[in-house]
Picture (cartoon, rainbow, N blue to C red):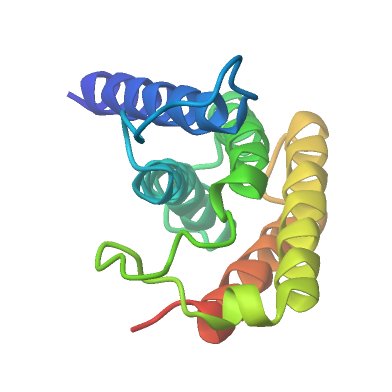
Length: 167
C-alpha cells in the first residue's frame, strides 16, 4: 500500500510539474484563447504534491532522530535524498499569481509580498536538506550530527509555515 501511495504521489508530481513547466515554455505562435490547465492551479498542485511527499519522508526521519523508531541508514538516506529532489520542485511552484483567487492554496500573500525572505527560507531549507542527506549517507546510527541536521530542516519547515502558511 505504501508503495502504491508513493508511486501515485510521484506520478501526480510528475504530471503536475510537466504541465507547470510546459506553461512556462515560449509559444510558437500566440493562442487565440487560453486553453489547457490553469497555471496557478498547476503550481498549487505541484507544491501540494511536493510538500505531501516531503512530509511523508520527513516524519520517519524524525521518528528515528527522536528515538521513536529504529535508525535504518539505508531508509533514512533514501528519504533524505528524496527530500532534496522534491525541494527542487518548489522553486517553480510559487509563480507570482498562483494565490490570487485560488481557494485551494494555504500560502499566505506574504510569500509574494516578502519575496526575498520567502526565497531565503526556501534556500535555507534546500541547503539544510542537502546537509541532512550528506549526514545520512555517512552516519550509521542516530548521532548528534544526524539529530542536528534533522533539527535544522525542522526549524526551516516551522519558520516558513509560521510566516507563510495559513492555518
